[in-house]
Image 1 (cartoon, rainbow, N blue to C red):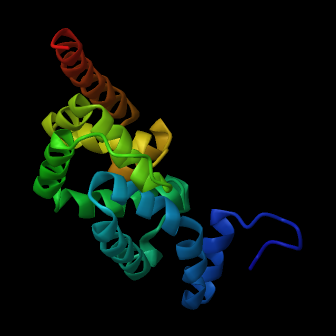
Image 2: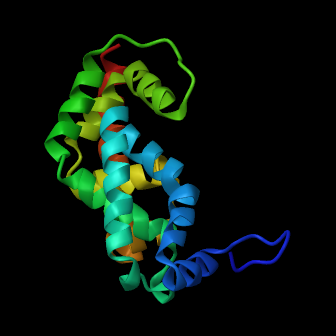
Amino acid sequence: MTAGVGEQVTDADLVADYRRNPELFTAVYDRYLHDIHRYVAGRLDTQMAEDIAAETFLLAFDQRDRFDPGKGGLRPWLFGFATNLVARHRRKEARHYKALARLDPAPVVEGHENRVVTSVTAQPYLAMALASLNGGERDVLLLLALGQLSYNEIAQALGISLGTVGSRLNRARAKIQILRDKETTHE
């Protein structure tokens, strides 16, 4: 690796390393696999997350020479691949949230993915709200909530402007609030 002893290896170092030796792309995989898996598992399910995470890194490896550090970091670049792969499964994702809305609240089980399922089943309106969002709104909201990306990283991952990130997020929040208000008035 490029960094010296005790120094943090940056994304720029990783890119420089794997450009010299493609086998070093495994460091990118090691650094970001957990984040990508957690994001996809929260959107679909754990089994699908394994497949999509693997496919994300396969695509990224195949296109590694196209990565431009001047346009952003590796993390949002990888989340862009993952989000595009999730988009192929949108109908399954919507069915997943509708099914979660029908479940009885589950006991908390360790692991981030399981905590996401537990919190969604504890609040059925949330699952229905996620199912009702259009793809762009759901992508922005879940990149923020599950992927823990910043607004800038979301814009980079989706190839949209920062203003579009903000407007999609505002629309998503408004829709969720409407369903939440309906839920609380029916209790």
